[in-house]
Image (cartoon, rainbow, N blue to C red; front, side, top):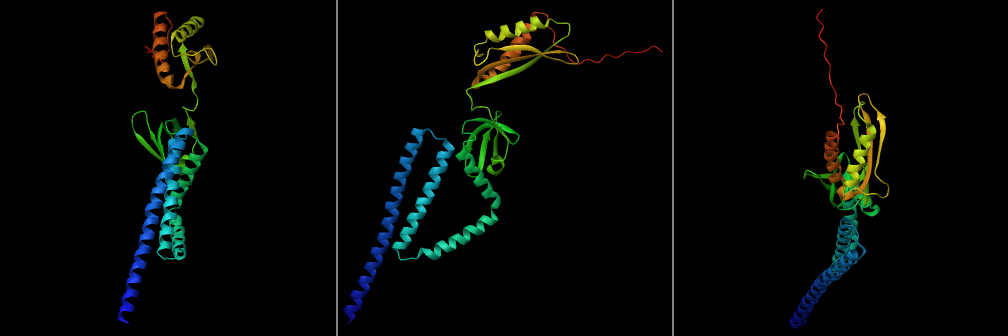
Length: 270
């Protein structure tokens, strides 16, 4: 009888060990299968040139989802019922969702931004009163790097409802500058100097429209001449600064004045 109980104990121990080994193999093999799937996804995303932030979102979501499936499979192998566990997790998710409803709004906003391609990583955008280059878009926040090297983190719940200006989406951009000259100056000569300076600049383009300079307003103390010229988006600021300096120099050399506000004070002797 003793030998029977001993053999029963050993069979029970062996059965438990086999179950544990089975569960361990499910976790181990499942993990490596997930790693393999993620590598294939990463290579596929590079071929289709998907946005970096969207790529990270998909990989993270698939990674978490597949690992949950593997863990549940391992628990089933151990003989643990996952029905009650799933019910408990569902209740916990509902409670967390109620407590973090604002954060979940940002998560929803992040998913919308990533799927609708409102902007992409590397774009220079203006949003929520800030402008900068998009560094990262995750589920909760969009991070901008400003021109003066500040990092601005904007909740996606705010970003998805904000007015967004994307300066990088198009390859070319039109530069508009208004120059003011005095009423006594020659407007035709000023327009000629502006266009000569623009056409001599290597960054100025003649397409989709040729450079344009016309009188657009008679202001209180000046005649306003508007310049419109196309350039590559990456050259926008360099061209603007160059033209402001070069046209001012051309005006000075040719006697074209730039008016400024003046205050005349008359002293009465009475």
